[in-house]
Image 1: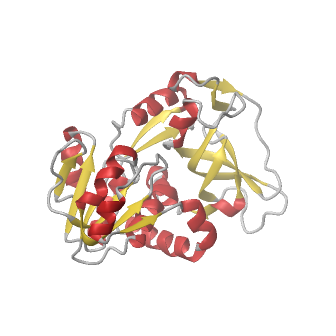
Image 2: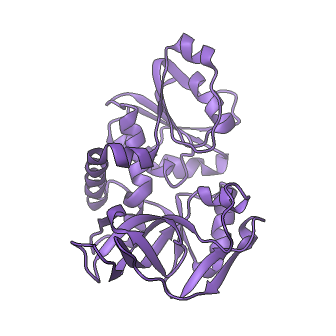
Length: 311
């Protein structure tokens, strides 16, 4: 089968399309024939050598596909079932082994790229807004608003009744895109003024952007941090503003509050079915995986970046 693998740590050019033996489904696993695979930001760190892995290596991510084989000990699923899930490695391929505990059924009526939005990015977006306690009529600022998670968060904030949605983006070229999703205002990270303070900030960028977020909050405002990039906050600003900072790690939330994940997922499927959630994506075939990663690295994507593993 075809599989994209890293052969070095020199950026996207280290990705190559190889012919490899087909994997098998181990105990507790499913083997999925992938319809679509998501590119996520952690691949950028891997390609720069952070957390070195044995080479060649294929990163993980989210995917939608059909069950091609069922491993020992798996019940309730059979060959041909359509599911979405997450795997921690070996995702950029035609066939992907996935833990059966990490998949969810996907309707036949939903296009694969749209379904993928619910599998991970939509869950992150809705979980962040819920964690921040966004109430009807409140204002919210969303960073990385044109990205895979952010463009869904803008729409979901509107669905939850936000009175004012501010989209923070890396360049003015993305303004029309996020306004079309429902943003009332658009600011760029380098702007000196981010406008009137908001009740809630959802940050998926971290670093220098994170440092500015507390200053964008009203007194008693809330900040949800969902970036693995790290960053620091001025404790004095937090104290004077009496702000609340909330961390969001989806792996921990899934383990500690699985009922929340199921509730959020059901809500997202409903919104998608009703046409009230409109995922946007750009897809690349496996042989152009490096181009997809380059788009992600440049922060030039509008919506989610996908790989299409189908022949």
